[in-house]
Amino acid sequence: MTTLSDFAARHWVLGGIAAALLWFVAGKESKHNIGPLWGALGVAILLVACGWAIAEKEWRGLVTGIVVLYWEMPSIQRSATQTKTQ
Image 1 (cartoon, rainbow, N blue to C red):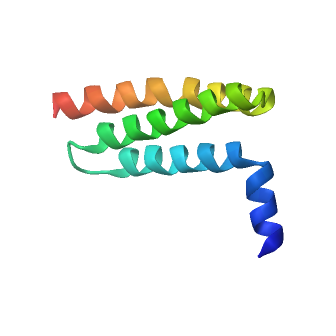
Image 2: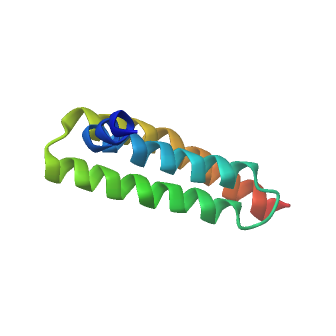
């Protein structure tokens, strides 16, 4: 268990990205109108992780977070548009 907590302490950006992706997938798979809001929560978590990466000078984590954010945003917009037209 110590190894897992050490890994999480050193690579916290991965945990933030994983949490954001889980919320994003939950929003994408949702059959209700609240799906885009869940995706937006994932984006908010990712933005917090990116801000923390800047504060901690974790530049690789920041770049990874930005790439994931770049991938999530258009998908959320498409999902929100599809929800409105249904």
